[in-house]
Structures are given as C-alpha cells and as structure tokens.
Image 1 (cartoon, rainbow, N blue to C red):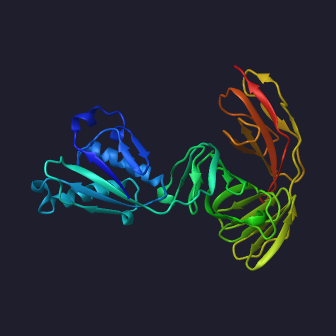
Image 2: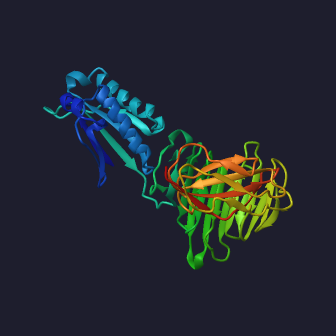
Image 3: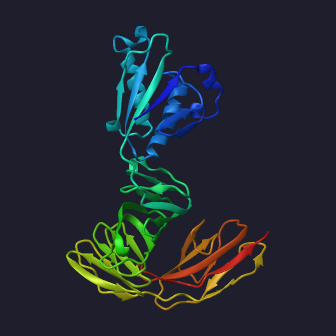
Length: 382
C-alpha cells in the first residue's frame, strides 16, 4: 500500500505550471512537487493528473481517499463529504468507481488539513508486449473506457487493449520474439503469453476490429499462436500472415509465408503461403484462394525532388484497387501513411520533406490484400 499526501498551501499551487507541480513514482511512493489543499481548482487538476497516472499503471487495483481535517471541519459528515468529492474527481477522470472509496479519519492535532490517497497493488506480473514503434493516435488500457495515449517503449500486460486511430499504426514486440503490426482503426486485446521449455509457447491475441499483420517467431512442437476474431480463429503454423475483423463480422486471413489454420463453425481450412480465406458470420471458412502477386513499380525508384513526385506502377490483372504505403523507415514501422486508389498512379498529397519509402499492394474485389511490391525511396528537398 502506498500513501500520497496532498497538503494545503494555495500560494505555492498558484505558482506551479503543471498539476501537482510534477508527479513521480519512487520506490512504491508517489511524490508531488507541491502540496495542495483538500478542495479547490488546483486540487481538482492534481487529482485528474493522479488519475491518469493510476490508469497508466495496471498493477494498482484500488484507491482510498482520506480527508484528514480538524475536528471542527470533520464532524457532522463534512469531512466525509470532502473525501467523497475528491473520490468523485478521480472517477470523473476515468478511475472505475468500484475501485475508489472515501473515508474521513481523525487528524493529528496541529496537522494541517490534507488529503491522503492509499493504493492497493496486485502482485507484479511480467509484461507480454512492448510498443516497438508507433505513429498517430495509439492508446492502451484495461478497457475501452480506460484507454490512454502510449508511447514507444511502453509495456502492455495480459488483458490490455491497444487501439489505433485514423491514419495511425503500432508495432508490438511480443515476449516470445514475434512482432505484430496493428494498422489504423484497429482494436486488439493482448492475452497471456506462456513460454515453456523446448521453445514451446502459447500466444493468444483477440482482434476486436481492424487488421493485424503478424511475423510469428519460430515455436517448438505443440506451440500455439492464435489470433481470434468474433467468428474465427487463425492458428499459426507458419510465420507471416494478416488477419482482419470486418464490421459485418467477417474474418479474413491472408497468409504470406508458412501455413495458418482458419477455423470457424467447427470447420477448419489450412491456408498456405500465397493464399487467403475468409469466414462469414455463421459460416465455415471458404476454400483458400490465391492472393494477388506483387505489383511492379514504375517509379520513382530513387532520386531527389523539389516536391513529392507522382508514384506509378503497372496494372495487375485481378486488382480492383491498390494500397499505397509511405513510411519514414524501410521496415514501415514509423510514420506510416496509407492511400487507397483505383488508379495506377498517385499524386502524394500534402507538403513533405526528407526521405520517404514507398510500396504498393494490390487488392481484389473481395478485399483480399496481396503481396507487397519492392520498396523504393525518394527524397524531397524543397
């Protein structure tokens, strides 16, 4: 249990630039950069800041707010009312009400009025994933109502959700050595990861919406690596694959390397590299179909330009549209931008500067995304 003391000194609070004057977690204690009174706008701002810090730490399971006031201010329920008001501030900022309680114990004679926050932590558990790369709005938390912005290097724990916003992308490094690329407008739940002897492992991800592309690390005999959607399960027997959970409940699988088993409605198909399959709601998986091959890029294949050049590629039979990706790094892990077009050329929108990498994938009439093209780069120097 940790105790946090917010003591009254309004003059100091008015001079602070940040809520609480700063906030540090040190050896199980929360240290504030300034004291705060039990009530007031500065206290509310600090409590909102504390709530955000609590939500970013999944190990904290409950919080007790204690209002320690002189008896003249504490009796007749007034002290408890102050504590409940502070507890409500935490709840308003996102801490679940079931995890917050309020008390008004007697204060020590001569002690200034203050709030104390006590935390109960569950035993520390190892993280199961690390945010290796991120661009755009990337959030994570124990539930959709508790999602908070995350940055590269942050850890994820069993049961946490990760959400990417519009034009955002994240790449997770899992504890077993696998990587998972989460594309824009996706929501994925990270399950427990069990690592055993002889390279055996059990990995489970729940794709609630959107698309993930996985590069699964080699596993020993009887290893399990599953990506579950609402209506299907993709069990890895290979390495690289994509899984999409569509709004209508359809689950789509595209295997780039190795083999993946897609199961739904007590039926299963094995989808080899270069093939795709889907399972519509209430139906077994469809027979595997070939994925479209990689488009041939026309250009640019390098060079420096005063403005972003027009990108071009050759028509590919069977393609309904094309998906163009631009990124700052050749592994397409940072600052990825995606454009869909029915044309075989793209005028890159918006002003840009520096080096950009690009590639193209063909998409068939049913939405199956094929193999990526070669990667080329161009440099913009106005």
